[in-house]
Amino acid sequence: MGYRVAVVGATGNVGREMLNILAEREFPCDEIAAVASSRSIGTEIEFGETGKMLKVKNIEHFDFTGWDIALFAVGSEPTKIYAPKAAAAGCVVIDNSSLYRMDPDVPLIVPEVNPDAIDGYKARNIIANPNCSTAQMVVALKPLHDKAKIKRVVVSTYQSVSGAGKAGLDELFEQSRAIFVGDQVEPRKFTKQIAFNVIPHIDVFLDDGSTKEEWKMIVETKKILDPKIKIQATCVRVPVFVGHSESLNIEFENEISAEEAQDILREAPGIMLVDKREDGGYVTPIEAVGDSATYVSRVREDPTVENGLALWCVSDNLRKGAALNAVQIAELLGRRHLKKG
Image 1 (cartoon, rainbow, N blue to C red):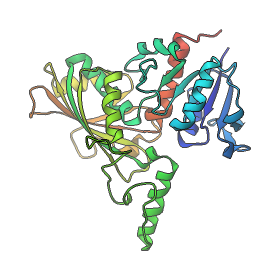
Image 2 (cartoon, rainbow, N blue to C red; image 1 turned 45 degrees about the vertical axis):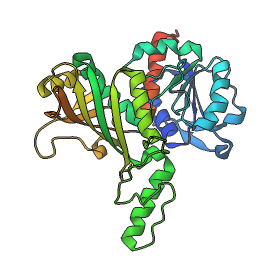
Image 3 (cartoon, helix red, strand yellow; image 1 turned 30 degrees about the vertical axis):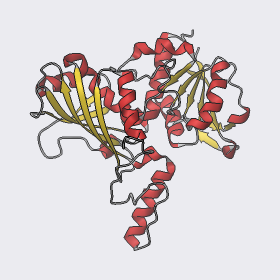
């Protein structure tokens, strides 16, 4: 026996990727529903490469009673309306928005990092998926933290436009084309021109001068990994379509060499170490697209602190940063709590 699974926001970038990954990983679905806003009524969407077409159902009238799992890939506002309804109907919500991430009664899960935390899902019947930039970072940090105990992390991100949704992808494409033909470029989704540029601003500014994206990385990492870790983040939007990259400087309590770190990362779940000290011996975002791994390269010792390492981390943000992590949570939930058959 399998599960009845609803994908809410199925017509968006992340929702479509969720459907693809459910099919790709052969998640045991007896029934799958594609759910979206009333704007998408009548749309048909393919369930991965199965050839099966799903007619989109209207979220406003969808009854979650009898459904086992709902993967939510919509913004915080519709999630605030419909996730509690789904949870109250007995359907476990795995939410990709930021709405519930810091709720103390909602587990925030990266399966390779804190799988045991999922046991707390029954308090609200909701599980939160972390921010895309947080997800790949904690996968890389976890095995190193277990070995040498991390004190402090300084991270600079290089985040693709797909993190801003279809509007972000469209803007980069349209601006790039306009520049080539000499047309005027007008920013709409982003605060400044994104084509051939970088923007050190993601989400809104907070009172202390940081952005909400930077705040998310800090508080989510503390919740997932260890509240004692000190973190400083600078989040930057770059003209890349898909794939987030991160430069990490990590200070540890205990001694750890670059060679030890490489050995640990080579065996760590969810990590692919590609670290040759030669031209091209590292991974860039374009190479990570469509892959499930979090890639780590450029592992080296940082001589500016007593026990320090620096490394480069790349992942497909639509997969590990969102859709894949949500499906992995569903798999973990099935193994531990929703066993069938």
